[in-house]
Length: 178
Length: 102
Image (cartoon, rainbow over all chains, first blue to last red):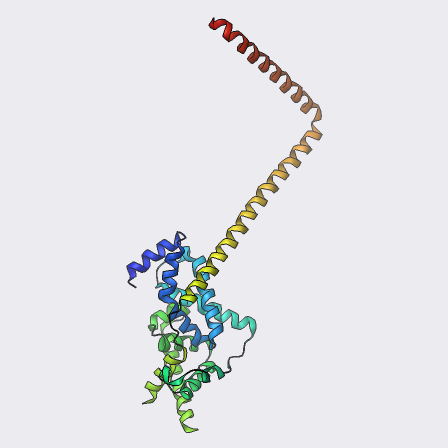
């Protein structure tokens, strides 16, 4: 979707056009859901959080200033909702990864052992670092976009990416050693 | 496959969702429900505020009337007198107009 199309849809959605908003959700749902799946570590929770993020964005659309992309803005809302939900419910960071075993490894292109090792290592990362890794390494957001979404200094984002990558690589090496 | 490629594959595969029209539909339904709830609440609050203001005015009027009953009585009598005068004048005009036209 071009920036012009996006701006046109945002303007229409601000006037209450739910079809325009549906088009925006359709265009950006994969990035937001993907990020929250990696951050929250659980698919069902992540999709609920993503839904809440899009509904909150619809409610606050009048306040969207267009300084970042719509995708970044909604991802930021989703991040804060996920972080608050985690704090409120005191959820354990390490999730049961059994659900990964139910997926077809061949179809996804990565061995299931690698995916389990990476998911477990992701769950052990501090919240901010996990969010940065999910955005930059998982969803392909730029460092500056991640800084904007997470309200972090650019240098902090870069160091989170480096350290997070190192820890995930170490987790894969440990998996090989078993 | 080197470790970097394995990491990229594992990160990408583990959570990449497919585009899901049901998700979009669920968001729009939830957003519409949210908007309906907000508008209903706003309408209820504004009706409540108007009703509370009207009740306050009625109470103030009742209090003022109780304190100034003599004046109110005079006012009611005066207004009644003016009303009677205007009604009589209109009646006479209506009766005299056809006679003047002839």
